Image 1: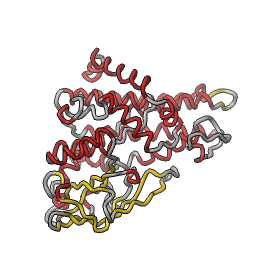
Image 2: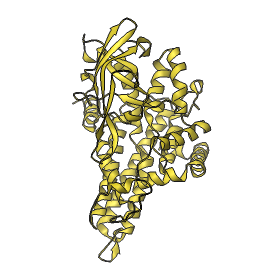
Image 3: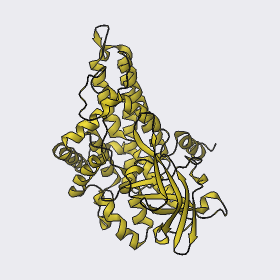
Image 4: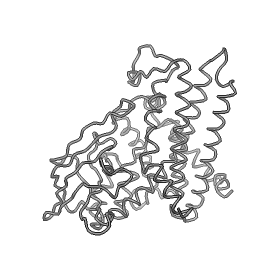
Length: 401
């Protein structure tokens, strides 16, 4: 297979080794330990790691050199994501480096590139994504947030929800409705909003894992300079689709699944039932084998997609398939973790998610983090375009349904 042959290329193997060695030497141990234990990370943890990557020149390695990147190929970018995740690095928050940045340098003005790209590269500016609304999740064309032109400003009113890390954000890139004429998609624009503007209110949403990483954002007559409009008014849907292709590609998360599967195997070895570890039980060995087979299948599909991308192919329907496979695999792995933990009694000690907590834990080491991961990952099949929507896309385009 072309994808497998490409992975054997000496230059590719050398790049993978470089990323792995860099993580071993430069990923701060305290941050890695928090990630592997599933504990809370502070904003400063993310920023510290991302500035280490910035100093290396890797924080936006997939960007063009003209904008401070390394001109990485899609394969190099995938290898970087895989190896950093396997090493226990924090989630590389994508809202600036993977979403806002590429949209700005592809469709934005020279002034926008000069103003915003440096802060994205250095993580001195923190971004959030203003897409979903109470009545518009996967159906983004149904957004209601309005942006009305008033001289050299837009007056923005509406509500965004499920806004990840908005409590830390300096800027939001948002889809707003600037017109109701024609198809709903035709009246959507892409606007950059300063989160410190009067009229912006951020309220926390405590999710099923009992953690605060989501928010609802209220925009009450927020004045935004017209110069913060990206591209052409009414073309926001085009820019949103460009961004979502990047988001769904990242949804494969092969590196994360590899790390979680290793953790599952270790957890099974630590839990004994009937005097023997779960790794000796035929049922659990079969379950682990099935998950391993799904991971290998995901890797194979990713490799073939990346091989095509290396040859110049643009993202297509593959991103929907990768998003479905990757998100459902992660849910399968974390679901198996919880089932294994439940053999000895399942207690979600959220206080165990706090770094430095010393009180006794119930169950195997790391249980709170594994339960949190399971609860958090219930959303993987929803965000980035719900899997039901992705299946509809594939059914329509491939099967003609």
